[in-house]
Length: 575
Image (cartoon, rainbow, N blue to C red; front, side):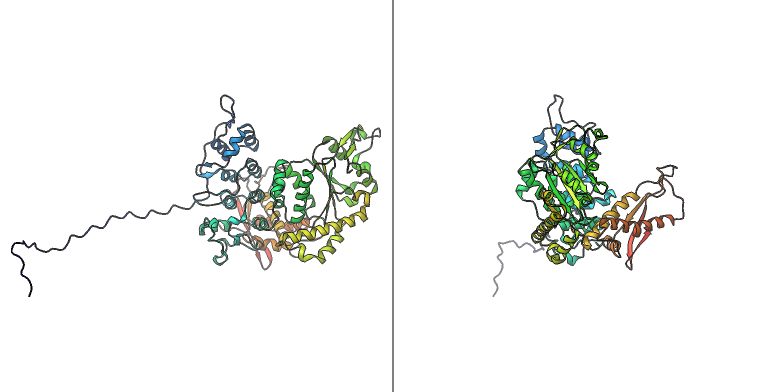
């Protein structure tokens, strides 16, 4: 039986509880748009001063970067850094300016020597933009789209200074000899995209990289993962001897990786133990395969004067060094004699090209400046002594090609496998020894005994030949961009204001070297001829078929270069 409610307790009517109001929710903030690879403007001082009113050195990173962005010359930037507070400069060179590392503004100038200058003050080439995560190397590649210019030299320079390709998904550069899709590699190829240092590479960024990365850049990125790295002592010696640029010489040369490494190591070991003895090297290999290029690059990177001597015109030692006083014409000397006299006791490079054309008369005369003790030479004009002990002599020859060819045929697996650099270098050392024996037989023991090192040069692989073709396609593009000039005279230029777009660059460059486009006996010269015949003529024909007048102020015309049925075709880009 249910209990009756107590009459003493008032009964309140039962009602539904009032609903608890839902808390107001703020709308989700919209995600910030991705960075468009455009840097903010930085105020530049009217004049870049490295000292205050009292003449004390002071370093102002903001002023420096503002001047860089506004186009200050290399000399102006160098002068500022030389006269400012050096410790402050090296301590603050990697500072942030308007949210971006200073090196982003430097790379945006697309100037190799500015990057090198900042690098000499300790600038970090592996820095990244904190907010977007974009690394400097990725910015250098993508920059091409904003400035409508090739940035391959920026990529080469950053790699030569120690930038690591690992910040990019590997599918962007390996294998390098393939066309890159405009949207970037396919999803299934991006197996390392989840790596922490690749989170910046979003879908839209991959599209930008896919549109801008080119065959040459892919080649150097891939190469950077395979070359032997310099040791800490190599780096230390290079820094103390102001030869740091030499450490990256491999990134300015297509092919000849082992020869470049051997040159770098030989030069550094030569500087570790200074001797009163010149460095004399033989560059042996087929014509057009990088001997002159490597020698010039050595001088360029180390800021050394360079004298090329064509030995095909030398039949007597007087034609090389000039007549001795008091013979007629002795007072004029010769280019080589005068070069040695100007650089007495200084480091400089003498490049004797096609040395096999010289004779025993020349070889005998060279024994004195090549001498192991002293490297002295007598100026033919006035018979004063010249110190040649710091001269770098390079003897280039293709007389030893049969030895190189035979060795390569029997050791091709080791020599051409760049995935095993140690085995490759060991094979090339054996080849260098074989070259020395052949050189001694052809040029006799007295001259051979004064040679410091023998560097073998090999023929190009199909991939390397294609990259060389790409290099000359880029040079052709730069030439064609020059403005039209209709004025009569030597400066008249009826072809110009043309830009090439080569989306399938690997296919195009492979087509260039096909069917004799690369001749092993002619080397790079044959590839230059092929670019002229297979591409330049087509572009000019397409240009002339346009049914309107050539004008000086005409808009830039874009021509697309493609491959159809293994043949190169050129057509105007659709607007």
